[in-house]
Amino acid sequence: MFKKILIANRGEIALRVICACKELGIRTVAIYSEADRLSLPVRFADEAICIGPPQLAQSYLNIPAVISAAEIANVEAVHPGYGLLAENANFAEVCETSGIKFIGPKPEVTRLMGEKEKARSAMKSAGVPILPGSDGIIASEGEALEWARKVGLPVIVKASAGGGGRGMRIVRNAEELPGLFKAAQAEAAGAFGNGDLYMEKYVEHPRHIEFQVLADEHGNVVSLGERECSIQRRHQKLLEESPSTQVTPELRQQIGDVLCRSLGSIGYTNAGTVEFLMDQNRNLHFIEMNTRIQVEHPVTEMVTDVDLVKSQIMIAAGAKMSDVLMGPIVHRGHSIECRINAEHPEKFTPSAGKITAFHPAGGTGVRVDTAAYAEGVIPPYYDSLIAKLIVRAKDRNEAVSRMSRALDMFIVEGVYTTIPLHRKILADPDFRAGKIDTGFIERFLRRNGHM
Image (cartoon, rainbow, N blue to C red; front, side, top):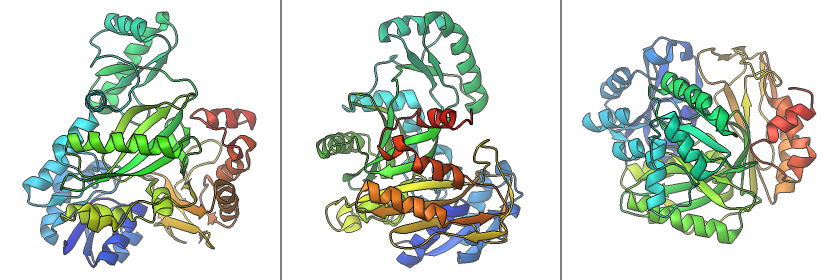
């Protein structure tokens, strides 16, 4: 096992990794920007190193600064958390070159999965179900029109290097395709430095379902089941749950088996999440893979009793899956996670500032992952996540009731938060009945007069 790990992240996920390391008897090194000097990861890590000013490019995204901190602290491994450098193959490569273990997949696998069209081709070759679409990058508007005719409208053009909904356009008629193609290309080039696009059949009213996997460095891959992530706004998730009401035990087993074979064939290691769209006939179609721990990983932990972050660290240290899991995966009950963001709950605008009062919810079956505290400051430079409120219960109905109760008991003052929005979502009849898809939030906001 490693003796010392550097955490190349901030906020709640940095604190989450520190917790896992402490339980494994590993010393931790936190890095921080000047804006995070008084943060809880800095307080609870064994060592902390300032790596620059508040701006991301000069601190948390500054690879030479992060590597210098790792070398100064003489660590054996780096945990990247999620976001920031977590899916940066170049960073993983530099870690490897510097003799530091990157807790994640190999750089070449991260690179493969990061290019969406290549990932799509690799998954198709391995037998994972995918949507009909173009065979590779589309070179021109004329070629896009040809593919649209083959695939059948509506279609969606997507940035190959994309994420977060940028570089994507839905095309419903052939006349608007050239303009939307140009717009997506320009947005992708501006956001990712790469304007390459590919095309897929557009699924109306899909559900967003993702599968959690773990793979050791000895060729063993396991699936830990799915999470339902359909409650999202502009491709940003707001609430997640596990299991999905639409995934049967047979489908869970079938997709899990396919993923284990396919990820084994490409040499995948460590934790990963494979994302699918589910159509109205309950068919799953691969869309992308995230080669890191996810924000919503706690809902899987709650229903499987598997500590995914400790698993990541043990796998990177060379442990076999049999020693990591100590038995078969068993799913128990239902879990829901609400992302509590420092945002105006109706305008979705960021709300940075000082937290004047902070009382996280507690009680049976409630977990809060946070690095926030009373008198702490939400800086304007970073992601607006304050906390993740997670509940577990015997079934979905009880989980919804428990989450509603926990939201009522969660106090954050001094900044706006999305807690009022989550309360309304949990009270919505369609949500309670499980009638959800990726368009739920837009419909919900219109019904409640917010659009």
